[in-house]
Length: 113
Length: 115
Image (cartoon, rainbow over all chains, first blue to last red; front, side, top):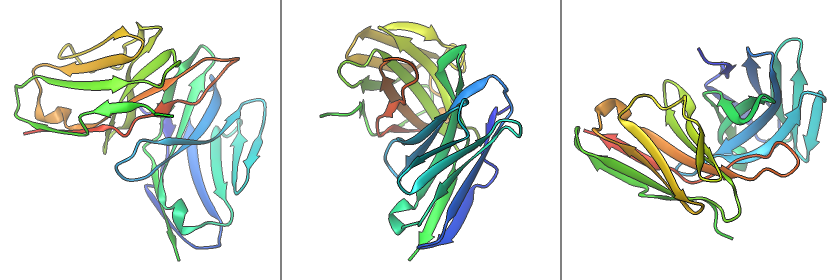
């Protein structure tokens, strides 16, 4: 019973266009969310985070949106670049155990030149 | 500055053998995490330590798995005896707590294959 789900295993986008990666969660106690990016043969690297007191957080080309009522978050990458091609994981934790992160299964993004 | 260091990067061994995975966290980090990544279940937290003390081991699959952190700069994850279903990529991560949530920094993982 995965508490964090990424239902799209893969996504293909043209360079310069927007990439939208989605993530759903089931636990209403989750109040901190992160996105990680992972290249082959490397560990995940932190990309961007958002706490439940916000509904949007932006960092350069990356924006994370949080819809608490729908228990849904998304990562927007604009404009997409070939170097963004990687697997993206979303993760969530709850204040009651803030070090315990639950990860989705990942979405593989391919940005075509 | 060095990140989280894991060894070995790859391990291939036969079923029934003991496997030991090693991790050196980032200096100054007081939390250490062990994760397992599989195609079916994605990234799962196995166990985490705070100041070398195990805090939550509820993700450890069974008694064949054990983890230790004898000091602030070293941790091991041991599987004995190993089984083919243990084949996965195992990641170690570390973080520090300063004023709230902090992202975890991951090593490059150990790809484990049990034949």
